Amino acid sequence: MADSTQRFDFVIAANRLPVDRVVDADGNVEWHRSPGGLVTAMESVMSERDGVWVGWAGEAGEAPAPFDEGGMRLHPVPLSEEEVAGYYEGFSNDTLWPIYHDVIVPAQFHRKWWQLYREVNERFAQALADVAAEGATVWVHDYQLQLVPALLRQLRSDVRIGWFDHIPFPPVELFGQLPWRAAILEGLLGADFLGFQRPGDAENFLRACRRHLGMTVKGDVVHVGKTTGGHDVRAASVPISVDFSSMDELARRPEVRRRAKEIRASLGDPSVLLLGIDRLDYTKGIRHRLKAYEELLRDGHLDGSDTTFVQIATPSRERIDAYIDLREHVESAVGRINGEYSDIGSPAMEYLHQSHPREELAALYLAADIMLVTPLRDGMNLVAKEYVSCRHDNGGALVLSEFTGAAEELKEAYLVNPHDTVGLKRTIMDAIGASPAERSRRMKALRRRVRRNDVQHWAASFLEQLEAAPGRPARHTRPATLEREEREGRVDALEHQRQLDAQEDEAHATDEEA
Ligand code: GDG
Image (cartoon, rainbow, N blue to C red):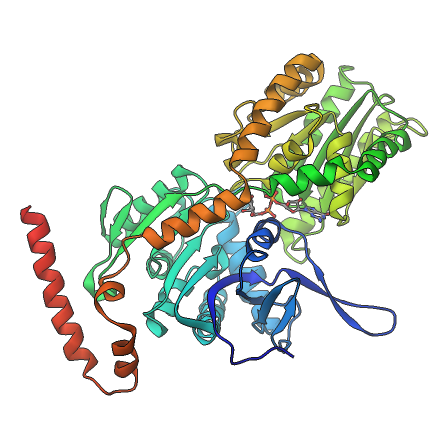
């Protein structure tokens, strides 16, 4: 068992630990790496550092003791059945997720869910305070933990706190629907630096601070009033990416290339192979791409006996109504398309509601002529970048929704508005009809960009900006020893704070005069 008194200089907090518990036939417990955008991105960052990852282990009830896995310490936080239903499936995924993704489905508001969200955020903040060494860097992830920065700040003013938003940050009009909007903004403002996927997300956040909290915002910095901490918080875009070189290397392996050929052969060697890989989520635009594909078959632009569309839909949030409805809709469309347009041995569609190993995904990327990434809203979309990373042959074509963070960078993709069925169909046909030279020109440019802006670059850039963030006066003016003495009651903390506030007032007055 791991030493539970050990403290770490680098701490990650995310809703989930990057592993799943698996029990083998003999009843032995093993931990397997789990799929997902955040996990994929952070694993390569953690492999280079001596740090700890704090998160939920994935099963309700008591949490396992801290343990080491894949070169990092994992520190589980427990969640009860009620908390999984209220904090995770409820508030995170049925209130925040829809609001932050343009209300593609209506958001549900329940005060009980909010209470559970607050309680779980408090538990995370306490766990972080327990494992962080003096002056540690704490990197909090995503929309499930938006209250953690301020809660942790209250417990540990010596640590530097960054928060990264993996999903979009909504426009003020949508964010304003949340009855708890002020508390969420105040929670985030406990951080020193807030990272977002797109500049537009950071701007939405800054606007929300102005509109809903009446805060002063100068450029990309929010000045937090003294009643709520009295410090500066910077918000900027730091677009996430993928581990380009490891995906590129994986796709070059002879067995992966062999598997790519095998996949095509097993589908009857179609002339055109289209591919979608997504969590089965209504934000991903799976219904929209199925509609476009079905119409292309119906109108005779594509021949179902010579075209296959492979859709991998990883199971996700299966107890939430909107996800149950989506699955029914997708599976009925797939059945209809296959019933109408397949031949024996050459399916018009192949649909797999399963998770697959990375090697298999790489082989699929390599096998596909056309990659369909058509979200209605997506923070970034790592699948688009993974596809590009795997195409060392400069082949294939990426059809990419304008409403993904990835579209801000991947301008040489075939960009589409997935709501525009006519435009989507036309763009798919343009990508199919493009010459090998045109595809290669686009793919080379895309690969250059992802190679340069890979996940290592993203993490380094986030951490650099966190370190350089304006921070709070306390970090610069109050030695850690003094903080400790205050906690132990050996000096009068309030008196000291009064002196600091007075100093700060003077400093601001001088700034404004200048
Ligand atoms: C959130 C934001 C943002 C999928 N199926 C399997 C599997 N995956 C992997 C993919 C990819 C990841 O999961 C999915 O990443 P996305 O970016 O598409 O989407 P979200 O899960 O919604 O992630 C998103 C991301 O965070 C990062 O910031 O880009 O906008 O919503 O890496 O390859 N991996 C394996 N088997 C599967 O079956 N091994």
